[in-house]
Length: 232
Image 1 (spheres, rainbow, N blue to C red):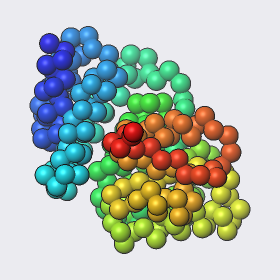
Image 2: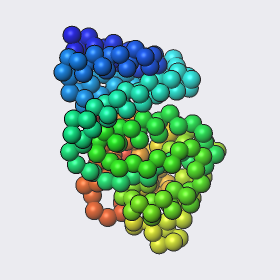
Image 3: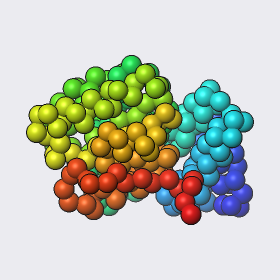
Image 4: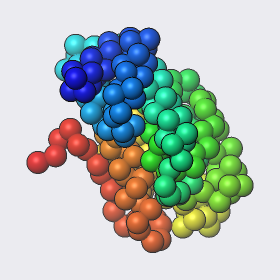
């Protein structure tokens, strides 16, 4: 039954059926499934489906948005269950994240933010259309380990580069890891601006953040690229 539930959950997420997704998560809880198993077996599969459709040209931004919204609901439910069960076992690090200035699309960012919380990160999500100096100010205020930005707009790409340049110019580049992502943010762009990491999707991003927290010292000599969709 658990396998069937996870298949239904993944389908509901891919189709953006929020109410169905919530129903299947609660059903999985009732069956005694561990919260992280639900996330990994149902949530990940659902996002994989819609991401592949999008990459193949079989789905468009609106479908991606509603799937992301459904996934966010699922992650929030799972996080609440984890907290009620005693919380996350350890704090991995502190992250300040935001959508780049000029960009009001927050699909991927919201999912990444929620997944980071489930995985033990303290996240300060500043929202959409955030000037880069506000992001850096918040990072200084909370003594962040990682600054993360994403964008779905090519017109906002220069603002990602501004973060690295400003940190370098003010002598603060070695205080934070800097991670970028989003549709138009290519691996070449991430390397060119000197970002410490780039992830293909929300799940790669979380693994990237975990990896960075095992490394001492920033900036890195080479950008870490995590791309589970094109490994091997």
